[in-house]
Length: 241
Length: 241
Image 1 (tube, one colour):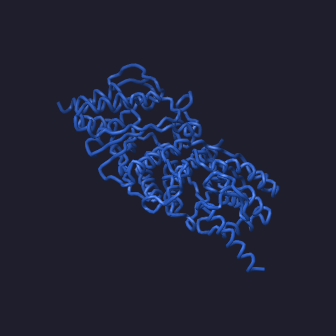
Image 2 (tube, chains in turn blue, purple):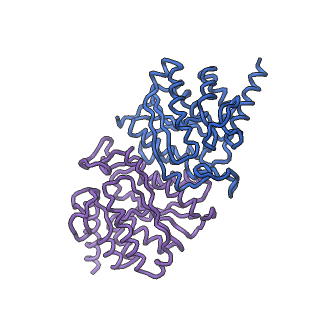
Image 3 (cartoon, one colour):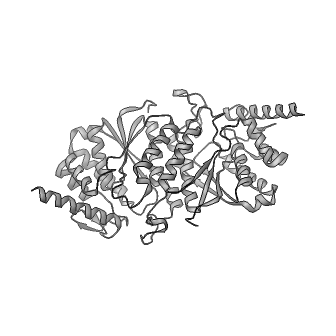
């Protein structure tokens, strides 16, 4: 481990969902060395973490260059986050809108905690770039996904660790359909199929039944968003033909 | 628990050291309701956490008003922080200067993690004010103690949780001697004696031997700073007589 910050290395927040799988391919396309970090915090969709290995193996197998670039996969255990949060993501309660217009899946500061831990690890690993799948477009009102939040945190991290990290959020302004499109550009049909088959988005933590767009309950907000994005992506392809 | 943010409530980062004990008294003097939060992250000075209860009991006993105001004491377990950090604060190695002019006691982003978890808890508890003992004056070069860092993080937290938290750092511009002076102003000789007797500052996690300024190894940077501050505080008192 080196205290030297490498401009050409990246640490990808990799949960095993559609967005982070796309971010991993994006980072492998762009940086010379890529490591991943996943978090375990008592979430109901722990199956996401089990998808990580199958997804990263699949992505690694796609291009020899990507296989060479893909380094360590880190997993950090933050049980406390689940305890503080006590939300529908960590308890077996119905997902619904709570006070202040936020769904009760909101874990306060979740992305702030993730990015801060990622930066601490990046500091130790000598990695300058941190990549996350935060997105304003379909963000369900989560304030910690906003571009403004990420920028403010980037400043706080750089000041607080006295380093020049760059937080990258390649999906920030993309719709879910555009995220599918990006995956296609990066890895063609092979990557699309891999993401459909192996990534997990459903809040309920169930593989559920097979849909065109992948597995899930098909009912929760995350499944609905994924299904809608897939339909739009397919519609674009149809209209191009 | 309420989603409503109370302007007159505070959550104090309370480690059981001299600084945080002074911050607790400061908050009790200023806010209507005060809760505390401590972190366990595999630090060598775990004895600090054991000091918390004795200190808060002592502080509570000092004024009936303070006893009424002092609410829950929360402890969050963040073992991962120790694992990532791998510094002299969490391992049995000599404390020395590392690369980049920082002592090897630097846990990257420690205060960022603490404040973010504190804000997540404050969110759940409906508390608007967060109080921490960060200090630039004697800060040993830790970049996460800088006023600029705290201000940037305050913005990131408010944006990321969509709340108006105020981070207070009453010791930011005080020397250790001035921190003793503040404790005296807040709680007189009783508070000074309590802090000397019950607070823990030593990096080595040992009660050590009894000095004028309290217990500790007397050798580590934290003990040296505390001893120096005490001597200056005493000198001021002498010159006033």
